Amino acid sequence: MLTALLDIFFPSVCAVCEKDIAEGPLCETCSVAFDSKKIRSPLCLKCGDPFISIEGSDRTCGKCLTAKIPFNVARSGFIYDGAVAESIHRFKYNGKVILAYPLGALMASCAEALQLKPDVVVPVPLHIERLKARGFNQSLMLAKILAKRLGVKTDCSNLKRTRPTLPQIGLKHEERAENVAGAFKVINSLAFKNKNILLIDDVLTTGATIRECAKTLKKAGAEVNILTLARAVKS
Ligand SMILES: [Zn+2]
Ligand SMILES: [Zn+2]
Image 1 (spheres, rainbow, N blue to C red):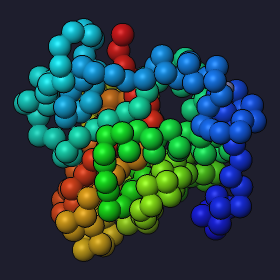
Image 2 (image 1 turned 90 degrees about the vertical axis):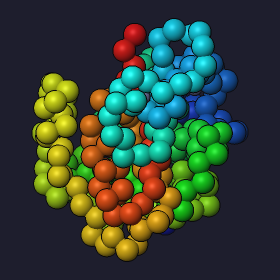
Image 3 (image 1 turned 30 degrees about the horizontal axis):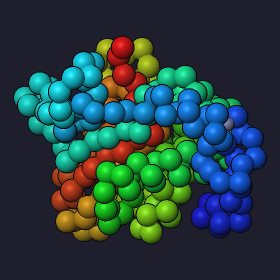
């Protein structure tokens, strides 16, 4: 049903100011605002965290050198700040689902620029209780639009949340990992075995949730790359 809806309505509105535009995903003014939040090199080759210093080239950060990483690369399009944060907030919390189109299109451009060629796109699942409260899974909507642009399938039923988790906000780093440990499972491992999966979320904060998802997918035999629209970056 969602796919059908996505096909019927394909409006061109700017992802920030919602002005009608002939060509998306952003109006000229908002393009400038988004561009100023674009994540650029130098960044970590694995986790995609940008380095504070603008000098030097991409390299692996200290954390990724020592930790076990369950994905090939993780990347985000933009810093979660300013116009970017504002549009995601309106999409996610103010129910402006129309913004899924321009935001999903921006993610597709990121995936293309990174030459990520997944077999299947998988959104981070929401627990049913959270889904009921919000009415939609923002990651699923973004994944559908992104996958459509890339010409690949979305799988939104094979990776499941097995239990509700506390909101990650307000939890310490270790508590966040603990909060989501074992919270996901793959229903049919064979369907993901040897598949190149692009795992999608709207915002990466500490990355504990999406890492746990990646770990679960990897255990099922998949190769995982991560793409989020935005990422919280310490300034
Ligand atoms: Zn605009
Ligand atoms: Zn790293």
